[in-house]
Length: 176
Image (tube, rainbow, N blue to C red; front, side, top):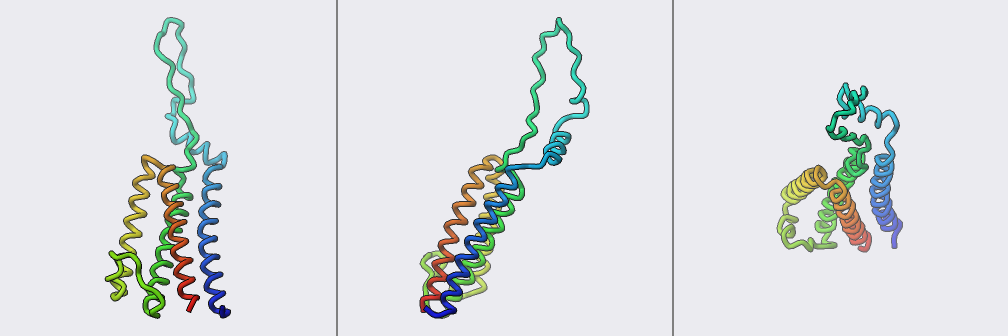
């Protein structure tokens, strides 16, 4: 294996591991909010009169007011979502570049039959890949509103899958 081939293989592995580790760091930061952030969220959630207790009347049979939880789910955190979405977009870009480079060097072919015809037209291939990536990110964002944990795990799975695709593409480029 030539030095340039080892470099491209190492670069692909480093990019994939950095992308995934960046997502993990963002998830850890999101799961431990600072006291100021929790206080700010609590004041934004509670009404102004919530700090004063309601008068107690021994003859009152009204149920007690529900308490408002100030803890936000770490799965709903913006840094986590941005990390996962940006990693997905970066991996899509790397997949596009490495696929086109390998095809134009006659070192590989597109195995997806729906995309294979577009590889002869780089602009159409890039536009289609960008549209697919953008729509996937949009759908993950929509899913995260009702099911934040499922959306986060879906994004992690897609990022892991595309990391293997990018690494495979780099191996194809480095093998010849």
